[in-house]
Image 1: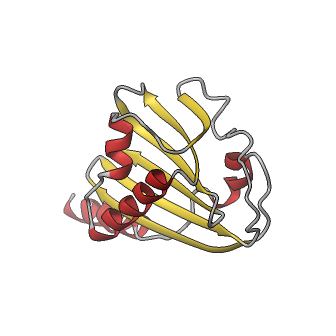
Image 2: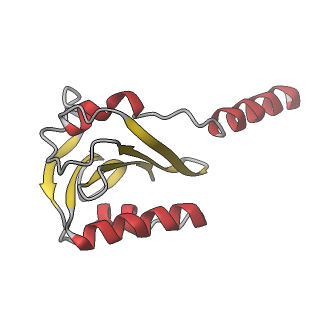
Length: 160
């Protein structure tokens, strides 16, 4: 029994240490337009038992000021409460803001949260999100922020 638990633990660690990008093939669906070549992508993750915060960033070569068209990620799954693209800043002090801008699981997670908060405060971009089971109680959240100055997409995938 101990060997089986050890093997499961090793597999879990190996999977969670992987840097596969969950949304790399979905950027055109998220933005509603093809931004062309992605010149840089990064992933910041912080995980605990039953909880995770993953932020993937995609910076595009196309630096023309682009307005996202329509976020069609998971649009056919009616269990999500969704908000399509709106202009920043996000004004409300909702639980969604707390998850994205105040996450403090690790130093890297804090840094990317502050970076997104600065983009929000500058108003230079757009945001879209999906939450389960509701906006008031987002236990599972996918928040997308698009920085129009840098042509950079942030995708936060968080489960609390």
